Image (tube, rainbow, N blue to C red; front, side, top):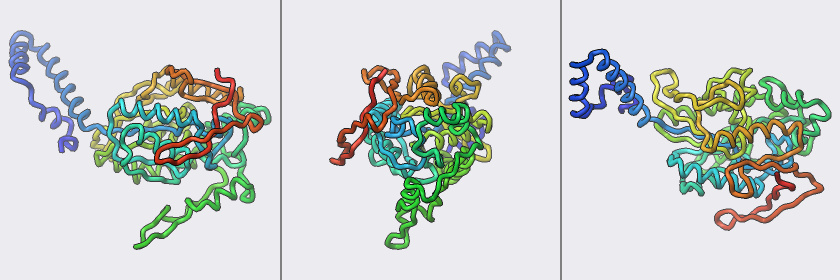
Length: 381
């Protein structure tokens, strides 16, 4: 295929129109230096168009707002559900995907319901419900250890906000390990989705082997398992010409972004993925070892100088505002949403949900399935 040819061959393979050729000959006779410049620009344009025609999409989306996002808690591997606002976020992201026009060939997600349900809402809303979906525990959120279930603002009061930010964004800063006897950890370890389940004919109905549930993870640990997914699934799919959608969690996606954007260990601190904000990378054919490369930078991460080669499908100001509010959760006990209740293209924040202010509603999604979800806290601002 043309995408496999060297860049010079790609450029030569695009015929010029007869009118363009006559114009070029005329310019050559009258002004040779200008003709050389025109030729160089034509070649660069031809290469760009040829590569763009072969470009495939890698789209990354964090799940919609979850119950513990609303409560400003470390969540990790705990299987909390979406809030009503999280469902709305997923539906708005689906509309953005549909408007972007990409037809996806593969969806990868974690084993946690907040990511799985977001994936289903995205595919349904984008009109692509039959796209194959793979659930992989290696795309689960970074395990928060003994921080699991703890409110970030409360932890900041105990340990200082700098330490909590190191736990949240540090590269090799481990959380305190959780006891295997702790109720949350015990429930995760007993979960059948992390057990290999043989099916008829010798096929596996779950993972190919039992998943070892960690007692806590650094970002480096999370990066190690996400790197495996990149190497054995994502990169080969892009190389084969497939459009890939990854629906996962904040730190798991930060790990994937670190790989794609080539971010250093130290600069990974600046990476933030708000809930349900589609981030699209153009994967271009490459003669390098990986077989794919990514296009020009579309901006930077937050207020840092770290280059971002993907483009958000939402307004940059809106995304940056959400990123800033996420980081402020160690200083203010708030929840953040990437959509406003007024329907405007802005974000919303509210007081973090607490048990004293519990509120839930029964929601139906597709095929008559219904489940309880937390409502948005009050007051919103």
